Length: 284
View 1 (cartoon, helix red, strand yellow):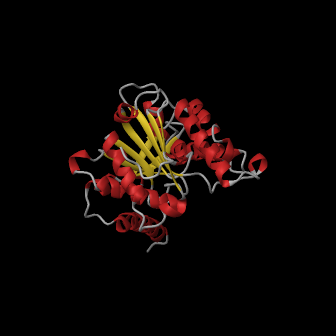
View 2 (cartoon, one colour; view 1 turned 120 degrees about the vertical axis):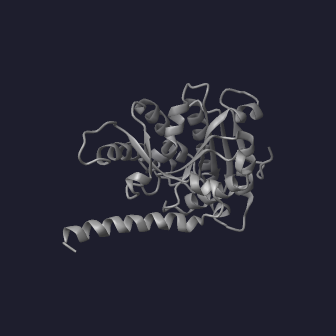
View 3 (cartoon, helix red, strand yellow; view 1 turned 120 degrees about the horizontal axis):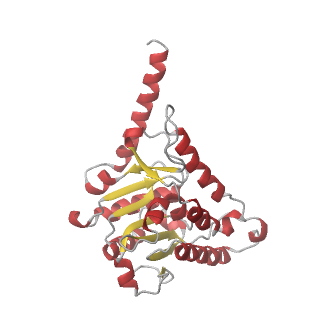
């Protein structure tokens, strides 16, 4: 496996040879930043935890240099933040018992440059090395530009594979914007009940963000609880933590589908649903 940047980090928590470790991956998370995987791909992490038949692998695309910082991290340079965030992501991989954790170390500006194909090429290398059955990445309606760039690179990398070697399922997950607006019949429902201790341990690893001014640990758990409670209005809660995802499998399997139209069609269906409900109550 050849990655473009010499600073890319391939970390194997249990010390297995990288080639063998990557080949164990059945569920692969592809996230933009350190901690994105733990927030958006927890369904895969929890499902593979202490499960030898299924193993989670992670890919973080950026170097962590642009992170927010206050408190004890207020005077950290970008290079210091990169080092801290890389180590935090490694610690999360140990706690979550990942088969492998790859940090590609790109600056966000490179990832957001459509003319720079290195990320897509690295992802193709990783997909060939892992052959995952399930992929978790960012959803195309996320509001963070770097997340969108990673989503696009992931889909393009999947489409570069022969059809028989593509993942069976691809989920676009919640981070910057939830997916409550997506039609219920279109949501990929991820029941995360019963894993609060693991989630708290993983979320709490990222002290550079929590202590640096962003309480992602509380926000993520609150979103999951809110999803569980507000998912159905006429039934008691059947779970205590839910995450929603957009099913991106059609994009991964059908190269003729336009990425922009795929997500805007979903938005139009949401608009239609809202319009019809209002008009019905207005007697129109």
